[in-house]
Image (cartoon, rainbow, N blue to C red; front, side):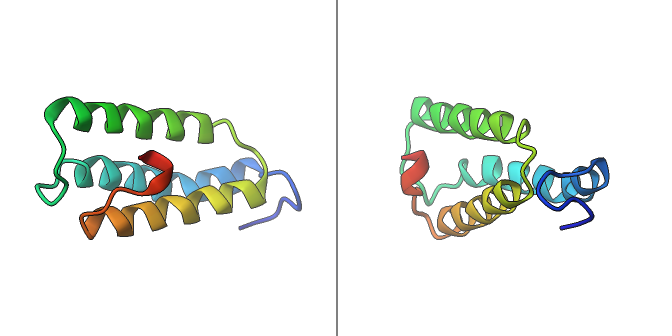
Length: 90
């Protein structure tokens, strides 16, 4: 990450901002995939859950926790692209 040892500095947060926004948008788009057999209401509920997760993650200041959240988002996105719903958003 960056200069902060335990807590993220403003520079660390700024460096990850683009990646986090990209992951957020990709996850929301992937939830619209026809590969996922979800009703409209279920899709909207899953999108609301994803938004809530990202909003809570936005308050995180620990470097290690931020890295873990990014890894979890990348893993969830890979499952969504395969047409599977990740267990932590199921």
